[in-house]
Length: 277
Length: 277
Image (cartoon, rainbow over all chains, first blue to last red; front, side, top):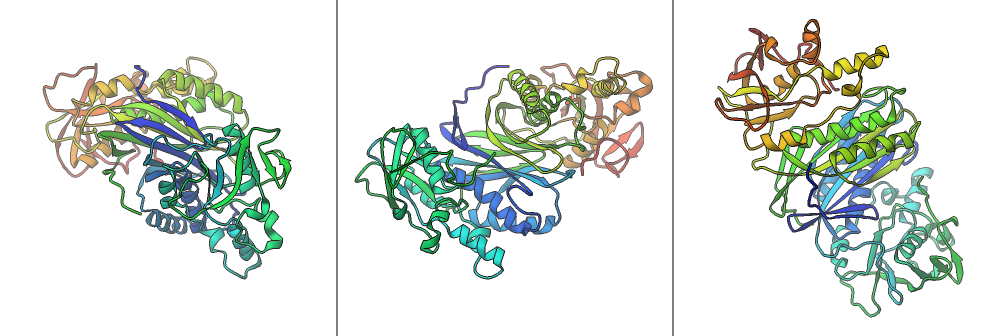
């Protein structure tokens, strides 16, 4: 077999493949019952989140979503899953291109592949932050945490947890301006560590500078919760940004640890957020 | 969000998406422990087959494979799985572009997305056979069945079952010549029914004309076993073919059933092959 001409770029959560003068961006995320969602969770919400986590990976690349392929293991309420899937695909305006279904033995496992087209080259990565860049976040964190608490307590608005929204327009608008970008899926502090490490810099951040959508006494927890899908990015000092964002820190030459939070050195080993296996 | 410009084509086992003047071909197949493979099966063989079933879907489109994304649930011997995965990716000369891993609760479930680039337009589908076309198969069926029996009995060569090979070169060579094409994954008779139905024709076939890689007394079984990944295709009468293939039937105007086998009308409802849920 001949080698294929696709330039290949294995980076972060997405693959970038050159095709016909375009950059195709691909991602595949899985969700497992009992790990990423509970057996009693509404399958429509599970479907929504499965789509959102994958679309959000494309968003962080400034990509325009083109479609998804679903790997679906039949579960307790497949019709309800399909309802949520259709709602999410309608919201993001992407087609279900194909996929596969299986009858599994045991807990449900789901996979989704999302593909998109880069709108800006080079495609942003998490590894491009340079010393003196400003670290930004597109909006408050902690909304999903509050939504989760509302869901658990049975009172209050759980929408932010059940139906998080990937910031498609913001990702595309920011792509030409950022030096590094990623979506916050596992907590702003943990993901900041990952971006700083990938970039070979240290981020100096003040915990109080991070906007939160939670009571002040829950600030520490909000900074360690994921699922908000806000964008974390860096841009050169003085760069005018096309969308609202809050400066939450500054990149400096690499120190001992990827993160200095209120003067305290922290790394991925500290309890900073949701750790995937 | 603006609508994306991707022309979309939802067909058969693959999606075809237009990008930058090229046709991107995508497929996603899953395999579940206890359904598609047994818990005691060698994880390296499971990995090989997971890659092959997906590459074979691309092959049937005449596509040149560009890469795969893996959705992997940790299992009993992950290192052994990776060995088989690397062997398969090396054999097909495709990169692992990305993917995701999860720790599941229960039986293992695996998903693979394969992407490729069409080498011929229009991209072959299973729905293009016309009356008077000849029905062909690229090689004998039943080899995987014999390999399975060898594996079960503990004697003989099980390679064809454990390490089936997608016919990448043949698919690309045939694409400009076929009116319809698909890979035989569920048995030549069942897949012939599907192709005939998708094309709106009936296939007249003689069971004795189908080449088999099994003793003659197992012909009926060989025609109902999948996993060989031979290509089933149709071409106009008299068309010179670029690769060896055996004529096994003829397309006629649609009759009562999609298949007439030795003069007997058959359809997907008959016991013709492996039926996925």
